[in-house]
Amino acid sequence: MIHFGKVLILIGVFLSLVGVVLIMSDEKLKWFGNLPLDFNYGSDKIRLFLPIGSMFVLSVLLSVLINIILKWLK
Image (cartoon, rainbow, N blue to C red; front, side, top):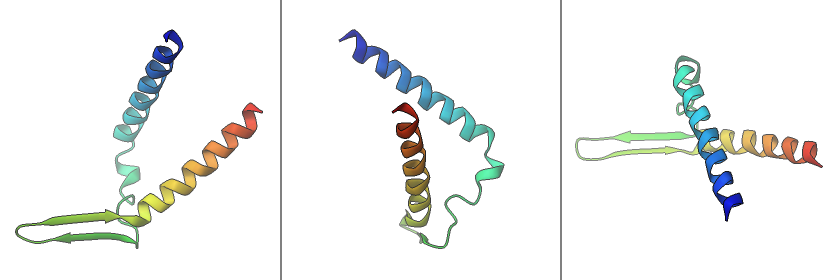
């Protein structure tokens, strides 16, 4: 059970570092959320945002990163 606790702490530290990087690079990431497949609709009573293009790009980047890390660990 101690091993699981250490993993959770490492995940928390990693997510905190990612958050700090995202906050510091706010100007450089303005394109994220404004890609061609991102759907944004707003009216008086409803606001809808579907970031399909941004999630596709994020999925590809994370897949490549995870594959590189897994090949490096073997």
